[in-house]
Image (cartoon, rainbow, N blue to C red; front, side):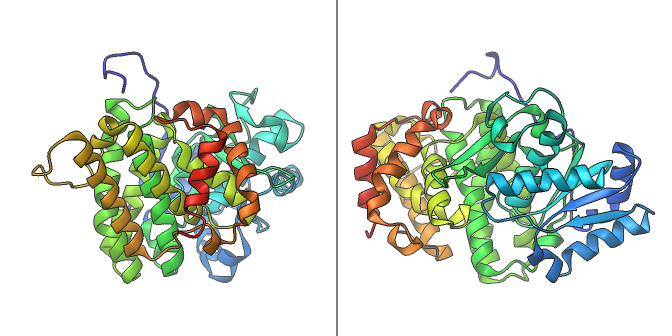
Length: 390
């Protein structure tokens, strides 16, 4: 981990608004960004749930005209992002508003940049490839998991579905993030569990990356503590407002760390698995979390032992290997509490895919280089095989 006084860069969304009921501030933030219509990028589920209507009503209250593009897809393929870019061109909005989980927000952010940079979405995969800012965006999350509203990373699935790849750029950040925990109140239990585990993975992974600093570890540690306490409550009782509010805040904190310290092999594996099996990102992360963290505890126990404190491991547990293992035990307990699948077979992965999943993961060099442990192809394939039907 870099020293706090070493050279480092910290980025986030310029304006972050947090709090139950803060959706009522939306018209003011739109007007500060642009004068004209708004295109809301979302999905049909949120239209049917009435969430989109709540947003467009707020905009109408401020005399702001909104049009809706509700074709955002889960685990968005590049073709869906390109379709969104075409919708932006047709509407010519002053502001593009991404409303939903990570898929809708990522789609809106990449598509807004495609419009100004030209070409196709796939052309802009990579780090710092975008040449100029996109149409201004606002992001409003309706789940507590992805933190797309405060990161400069947006992902999409390649046309051959071999992997999920990332557009990384300061231009991906929205101008404003509006985080109203009330929008998560109606999220079903299984989605609450999956998105909450995505928050946990962001925090745990970014805490032990090679780019971690004291500055990024502070919000990560806070997110870990809150998730351990409040995610099981939110899963058990969706009407628990305190748990909902706390998980939205944990997601924000984990997002700050994720955006600046990055993630490790857990996410690398999850991207390759999610692209093929078309499963929710949080579910894929959950399946990959424990095998990667067990490997890290074995190969780099000193680093993993540093996770023990934020995970609430008692000071009575002494010794580096013991604290590293205790950190893994806490994670195992959380996965059991939220009731998500723990094997690859359960989520629809075929054993024949495993070598390709491992190879696709290792091709994501940004994640691999950021990881504290770096297994080779055969070892990574064996790791996957070990959790295929464990």
